[in-house]
Image 1 (tube, rainbow, N blue to C red):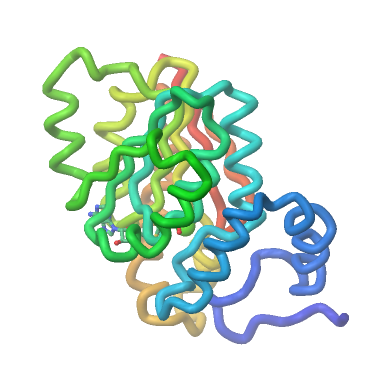
Image 2: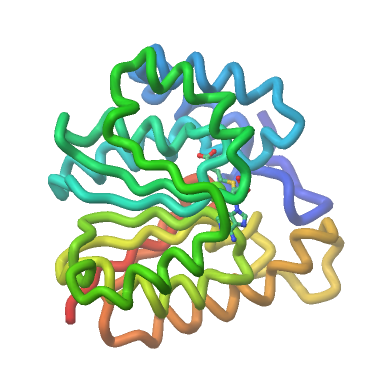
Length: 238
Ligand code: SAM
Ligand code: CA
């Protein structure tokens, strides 16, 4: 397949071609995708906002990362139908925990039967509502400081900087925060006058500000990966 030139920034894989991405999925992701995740992916595909779901390759990446760092106590901000949540729940040990937050419970409940059937729902505490006030309450109590091994942030991009200010206290030294969509459909490197969907243009500046702030933050080591729509891993070092 010839290289696909993207006329519009904002709705294609970040890879050189869709064929290459398809190759990754078919060769190493789909053959190893747990049955429950496949089922949830197929349910989500029928939902009108399915563009928001975590891709299968990113789900596989999260699963591997959680196992590599032996994560046990985790948090997720932005659940939608729960694909990344299920990937996390399956990767954690039986006594692992996920505090999962979303303003929308309905979408979480769409995926919940699959999570229950997979036998991992007991690891999840779901809180409906905006995440920021919950974080504010949590940091008031010193006992919560430095207690999270892994935090996945995949919600309102205009609040990522505000999340970071709080999460840096909640993650343990040596723990990891993953900020999702940090390449924002490739728009972060596009000319300001390039054609872009409205929502892509709106959040672009916030994502670019976040990327600069993370790169300048001495409390973390960072690694930005072109997986999914870009994920920046931040390892707390102090
Ligand atoms: N991680 C999910 C997955 O694997 O399918 C995708 C999350 S989706 C990209 C973003 C989610 O963030 C939406 O479900 C939305 O309701 C939620 N959200 C938006 N603003 C929020 C807020 N202030 N607090 C918590 N969740 C929020
Ligand atoms: Ca995402």
